[in-house]
Image (cartoon, rainbow, N blue to C red; front, side, top):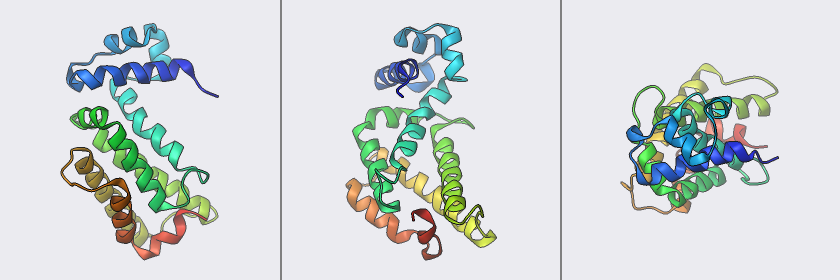
Length: 179
């Protein structure tokens, strides 16, 4: 079921960040743009960082579904394509700093998602200590690459980026991602 209020808040934020630096956006501005009250805003989000990070969370949650991505390579393609289609929003969001930054959120949520997929595909078990280290390095690397693609440091299309990243994934982890 689509939550219109949630979407209005996110769309209001996205409209603002398309034109205004993240640091200049306030919760009051988001509420006004979305046409919601303070209590309604706080029913859905803790702060403006939470709204900003909801963009990536919603994309990852959407594309991680087996009917949308047949594997890790497809997931990378969809996320990079989504980032490029929303380049202005993500570029400005990646300017945020601190613990709640978009960069930090991308890493943390990606790692949590990797662990969730692994547990699901291994009957509840998580990573071995060596796999945990590999996933930590891999998720950090993916996040850095995602930031740099959004910032247009690399001139590579989403399909080529997805192929390259899939090839870099440790062989010991590839079979845990989708069944």
